[in-house]
Length: 435
Image 1 (cartoon, one colour):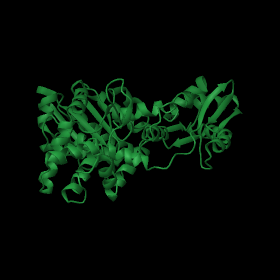
Image 2 (tube, one colour):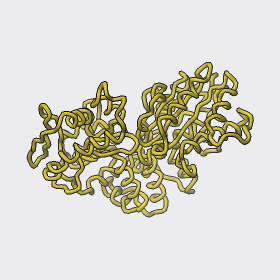
Image 3 (spheres, one colour):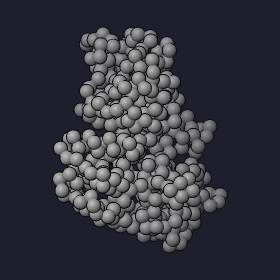
Image 4 (cartoon, rainbow, N blue to C red):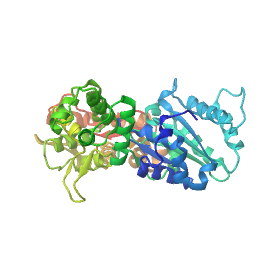
């Protein structure tokens, strides 16, 4: 196992998230872990696989028989299926959990399977695949199914996966049957944020007073990336923590590093989530954007003052960034208004479009989850029913093209956006209805 800085973190770091992740491991289950830009998803994952204190805390006596392999999928040269499997095998060999395989097949699959079968039956192996979504285009159904079969080949089923990405990875096929409820890594809790500042003090050779610490936590909302960079700017004297939140936010956004991180976080959001964030930043009561607000809340970007409190963006820094964003084009809403008819509407008006039955069936399948990616397999089953077995991805792509031809022209008129696209293709995953 590589040596990570997170190995030195206190055992109760990110306690709620780590408890959920290692709780799944304890039950011999697998779990997906998500976290948007700068939220510390990778740091949490490295902590889980390397920190023996946390493993003892959450796994108890099972920690002694639990072994971890960690693969940074985007840190590999290619990040394809073969290289991911080869890296898992190499780590098992380096940790002397299995004998060195030596030269063999061009494919790492048979070697890795032999290695997994050779593990001591009491060893619980946990394979953590970080940034899996970034390498997702280079994965296939057989890859996911092979991972599931590896787990099922263990007599006690004691092989778990931690699959991490900014968003939940796309269709995982048989692997999805092994997953617990997903864990989202959001802003740091207060205790973890203060501990992070202590590490920054040691790193920067600077001591923050209580006022500065409180200002940094408040303006960043505990977002790890914002907090780290803001601490550097305050320690250097570039930013004055005594400024009011709005003034300090404006000053921090003058830093290219923080502005780029805020933009990266913004780009991680779907169109529906961006629309909701803009409404909240402008003090508009969520209406049609309510689904986006709930999604932002799941990612930790929206907070409430109590269970019934009004939603607001999680920190003054991100609020200032969103307030400075230009307004989005007029939001378009696409619904199935009747038999084989679509309704395309915005604040500028509405139009109705007649659709052929099969194209209308595609609209129905997408409209159940507007703004969300619907896997291609689910769409094919919903649209073609008993005929789904013979339908190819290419046939579905042609059907999506026909739906775009029908909906894009009225959508562009009503959105006042010549680039508007009603249906977005998410390569190797599925489709999303933008409306």
